[in-house]
Length: 157
Picture 1 (tube, one colour):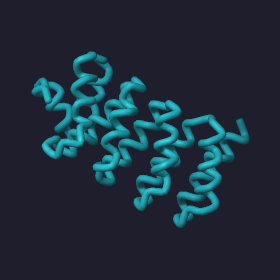
Picture 2 (cartoon, one colour; picture 1 turned 120 degrees about the vertical axis):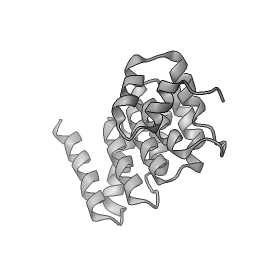
Picture 3 (spheres, helix red, strand yellow; picture 1 turned 45 degrees about the horizontal axis):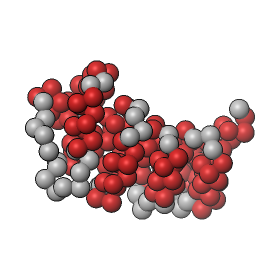
């Protein structure tokens, strides 16, 4: 992997999202490619960098990142899977929707919550069907109610 520019390294290490948001707003192609490289399954990539890169790529808005996110999903920890659900929901492709559906049964209720929010971004029958399934079957009452809220929103619009 290429050495990260200092400004990108600082943004990835910061506890504040503003530095990373500046990278996103600048929209440099080189930064996009470096962020994509951080989604390697290589164990030498710092998991915090990987999670922050997923966050940034979701807000970047370029669907080319979907495949990279999907490639790294099996090695992500809970925080990484949460970031992935959020980012895939923002990227909005059919491939992203399928991944969200597949991960909406995650053992972590936090990941499932973000999957519900991501599904709520899609105005597609597959997303609504999964929300209905979650409303009926999720073991967490709060998440069942959240899924129901998204279903009801769709019906009122």
